[in-house]
Amino acid sequence: MKKINWFIQNRLLRVAASLIVFSLALFTLGWLLTIGDYSVPTTVADDPNLPVIVANGYRFHGETFGNPDAPPLIVVHGGPGWDYRSLLPLQALADAFHVIFYDQRGSGLSSRVAAEELSLESALADLDAIVEKYRRGNRVDLVGHSWGAMLVAAYLGRKPDKVDHAVLAEPGFFNTELLERSGLRMGPLWEADYLLFAAIKWFESLHIDSPDDQAAADYFLAEVASRANPEYYCDGVIPAAGTLRWRAGATAMKAVLTSAANTGEALEFDITAGLKHYPRPVLLLASECNHFIGVEQQRRHAKYFNAAELAIIKGSGHMLFAEQPEASLATVRRYLRNH
Image 1 (cartoon, rainbow, N blue to C red):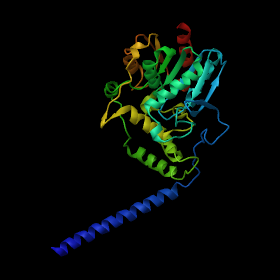
Image 2: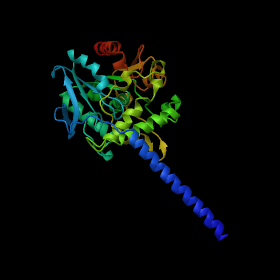
Image 3: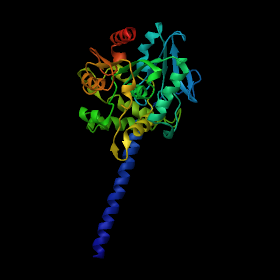
Image 4: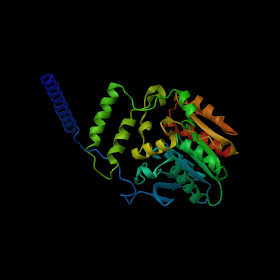
């Protein structure tokens, strides 16, 4: 019996040693094959030439356009963790508004912070600080896209008296029930070609050691996201507009979603509280091609407001301001003018 046990233990040790050697060889091969020059842009913490907006004790990457005495219109980007680059066509509204763009905390080209500083509550507090900075005692207009539209909706429920007009461009889901009804797949993709692509991008990220300690994770997120969610776009093809961003914020994405969506082990969230307190009509924008948070989903969202208009942007996927800027801007202008 002792001889049998010794034989089994010896075989197990050999198998374990072989796996370790194979793993090290595979890692070394991946490392060597992906040696190259990979980078992410610097943030306002390291680049003094980037425009900055200071609010809530934090330096946001941000800029304004138009007459500061014009009605303020604040643009809230998606993600969480992305930036406002794809929303810059809204700059055209500066002929009638003071248009304010900002990258949310830990996102885009704003400086990186620890995960403990990032949550749904911190995102709402930052938005409120931006609103207070520019509203001069008056109400502001808000335009949010995707996650940013969800953030704007949550803000309307809490601070309805501070907002005049609200444009919600294809927000995600307002609560768990709507998410579950959609059939949207959450989590990583398990197709072999995507996993191979992700593995290559992970090895590439290992060669990045600057400009900050979140650079590698940000690079990896941006790369794998560039091939995610083709069902959000026309013909299932992700257009160039679908990957139009400066830099991803991986820590921000994980921390904010975790804070917003997890109660114990269950996925449970709801941002609809107080929406009926907002007295004015909102504009919901939906793209023609998005199968998950397009027209039908925005019709469901409309029911949470006292009054809501729904406009469909033809020939567009999820990044409607970048894909169809003329039609999107014309629709927003019409809403702002009529109300």
